[in-house]
Length: 255
Image 1 (tube, rainbow, N blue to C red):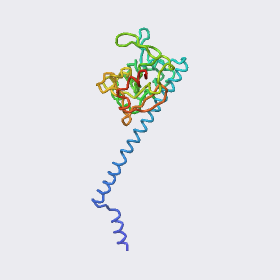
Image 2: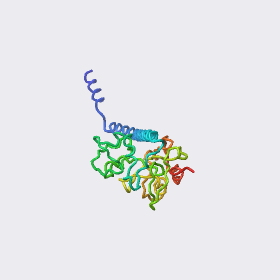
Image 3: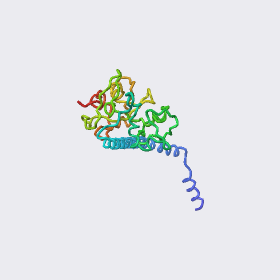
Image 4: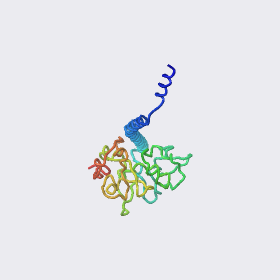
C-alpha cells in the first residue's frame, strides 16, 4: 500500500517534458491574448488623464477670463515691443499654482532655458502620453508644452511675418463659433523639441496639413486621436480625417 502511494505521489510531482512545453505554450497564448487588452486599457487611461488635464486648463482659463472682464490671456507669447515676451503662462501664473513652480521658483515653459527643472514639472500642463518632449527637450520647462496654442485669440495682438499687427479676438464673447474652435490640442514638435506650437500656422502643421511641417505637429497619440480643448470649454477628441484641411474653421474664425 505504501509503495502504491509513493508511486502516485511521484507521478503527481513530476512533469514530462511534453507536459511542461504544453503548459508554457498555454501561458504564452494567454499572455498574447491579455497583453493587447492591457495595453489598450493603459492607453485609454492615459487618454482620460489627458482630457482631465485639458478640462482643468479650461476651467482655470475661465477663472482668468472672469477676473479680467472677459479678456482672454495672450496666446502663447506676445512679440510686441515693450511687452518683454510675456507668455500665456506668466499671465496665468497665479492660476496654475505648483504646475509651474519648482521649490517655490517660477519657470516659464516658453522663456525659461533652465536645464535643472525636474521631470515631474508641468503637472496638468503635460499630457501623460507625451514622451517626446521628455526625451528630447533640452530645457526642462519645455516639458509643459504638450498642448498647442490657438494663435488667433488672446488679449494682446502679435506681429505677423511682415511686422504688421494681427487682429486677435481679445474677448471671449467675441469668439465666433466657440464650440468648433480649438483652444488647445495635443501636439509635438519633432523638428524643434524646445519650441511651442501655435496653431495659427495651421497650413504648415502636420495633422491639419499633409505637407512637411516647420511649425509643429498635432499629435494623434491617443489611439489615433488628438485630445482638444474647444473655446466653449468642452473637451473632445479628433481623428486626422476630422481636422485635415479644416484649419480655417477649427483654428481661425468659423465662417
